[in-house]
Image (tube, rainbow, N blue to C red; front, top):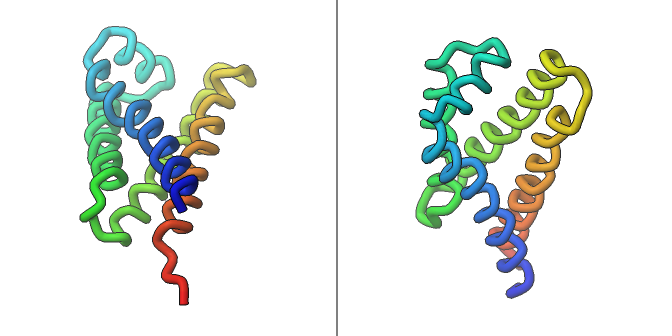
Length: 123
């Protein structure tokens, strides 16, 4: 059980840092704005994305948040990573940046699997 908690929190904190803290701190930089423009999205989309990422991270790391909300947060992040892969592939072609969101998705899946492992009622 302790090993499962360590794996869950390691993966979840990585997602929290990568998807919540970093975007919140860097979203207004010119590099971030150019990244959104480069993919063909308007600037307000990047702002909305950051807000939802921060809310999603809060939903994942606060234990008192209802399980249904956590499920939606996991789903939202999964969609985010899948569509980031599609966007990068469509704009930049196939390269490392195209597949990087899938690596983060794999870490999210570890968090999701261990979230359910820790919250399954054993009879």
